[in-house]
Amino acid sequence: MELESIILPGVSAQRPLVIAGPCSAETEEQVFTTAQALAKKDIRIFRAGVWKPRTKPGGFEGVGTEGLVWLNRVKKELGLYVSTEVATKSHVIEAVKHGIDILWIGARTSANPFAVQEIADALRITGFSGPVLIKNPVNPDLELWIGAIERIYNAGITKIGLIHRGFSSYDKKLYRNLPQWHIPIELKRRLPNLPLLVDPSHIGGKRELIAPLSQQAMDLNYDGLIIESHCDPDKAWSDKEQQITPDILSYILNTLVIRDTKQTTESLNELRQQIDQIDDELLAILAKRMRVSQEIGQYKKEHNMPVLQTVRYDEILDKRIKQAESMGMGTAFMKEVLEAIHEESIHQQIEVLNK
Ligand code: PEP
Ligand code: MN
Image (cartoon, rainbow, N blue to C red; front, side, top):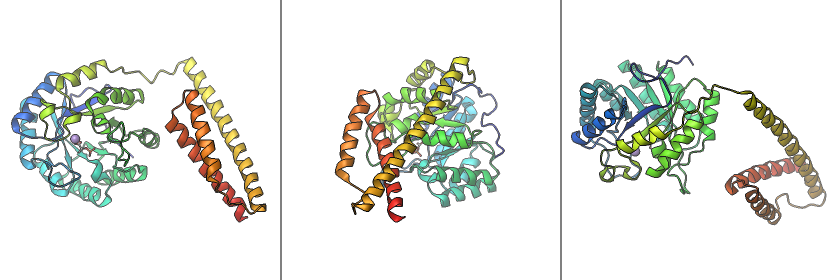
């Protein structure tokens, strides 16, 4: 992909690139008051949703095109760049007509190839050159995300950025949307030139998670942040639990530690060599475990025993998870590792059985 920078003239190229503003444009006054307070804190790019994709009908679905007029006023009077979410062809046409500088595709939309294609076609018609930011699809499907990126790129957009906003899960615990950091990191590995922003507001769903998630993203070398900020968060018409005032936002940004990742010191190289060696050993030991598994498969075949023996598996899980905890590793992590190993083990035994 031949991409251009998404950093617009006058915006600092230093990490992090920051986009901030309310979840939704509610009234002209709320938009303007928030934008003014953010501008005072040196925020250069303002966000506000005017069309709100809501999970269920009946909620606040956005003020629509009228909100674009307010955003345009923010652009003209305060000199901020303005951005909004588009989900249909007419959204794109309206947003471009009102001079919106940056468009983003939401997580429910990027999950739908028809919708993304419609947006891509509309972008081509309007001649809008970007930036276009593409949120990860709600479901943890890397290929679907890449597909959305390709559709937008194929429409002639070369200023593309990505937003990691977390993934839906049935089992919501700490986060509103599970971060699953490995998915955007894998995407960054495959498409290294695409700038990656984190949306800690929609991942965390809570004000107190914005600072730690932002720091984590910076530590993982993300390029930027998109954060929901409202002049009066408790009165927000949408996502009020996760919005913060411009003051708090500025405080969080000022306390972020930005580490320069380009310096690879000697000792870091040594540590990396150690990791490489350990990974070699890990692979060798896993392969050895699989060989033993195959022998067990052979034994079960000869004795006409079923491959899956759940009691034995439960015992292993229980014992090893406790052991992992005592060794300073997360129980959820160990469970996932053991489950993956077990699945491969079963697969190998079934192959023996079918020989
Ligand atoms: C938003 O940014 O306000 C939004 C609706 O986000 P998402 O698409 O990530 O749910
Ligand atoms: Mn929101």
